[in-house]
Length: 360
Image (cartoon, rainbow, N blue to C red; front, top):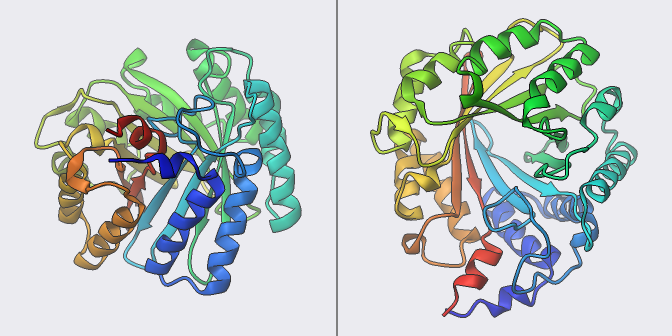
């Protein structure tokens, strides 16, 4: 198939077309759709107007093919939540320029949407990139739900000064934020296997709400299902059987995840620095299926019929190839437990460069 039509579009136009379709499925009103597109173009910043081209202009760790954004859909039994994640990149990109663009976007979000960047300022110097091998400097994401205000957050890189420095950096950041006790929970449960458990991301909600979170993400290399159940035991509300069932449903009944590591995240709020507000398990489902059609079938076993239908519709409208032709559109499937509430999130990649490079 010929995918030159993708290469000829700008990132902003390509993403906007996908977002319009997704918003239509989610019954967003016209005003909400326009607001969504404006937010994307703001977050995409300097690369929104760039032509996609036939090969990546830069490396972006957000997706497998360096497309600098992804979509996700959170399904929690209520209204679906649309999310997208963007990288801060310039045409001649460096870690330093990416960091500067991220800081500039923080100020724009504060100015235009009343986002809170006070906590970021407390830990800004800790996460400023200082290792040329670091995979990213700063990312931003937004949650969009029909009838509600957008919720922004940013992602920082604990490995900005090297992998070995990551634990000390995160512990220091928690101390600065007033969450010293949270480190004990994270180290006891999320980092219990030593070097097999690697700190990967640190995120902050850009909100003044009392429920504003910070989250720590950990990669669990070669983890067994039991290892992952032990990690999520750090959340007193997580059900042991629920974790096992989710893992088996997503990895084809294998006892361990060796194709690509699973990622966990622990979120804390001001209400309790000892116990997590929520915990999440992110399974890279694309590495445990032979095609996206099967990934959707696995998702169907976890979601309600109505949510499964929405998930398939959204994935299908993002896809520019048959779902059975390969993997990589539905990238991750996550299970989140927040007290007595459970939600599933489906992560969806646009596959721009992957499709362009695969054309025959």
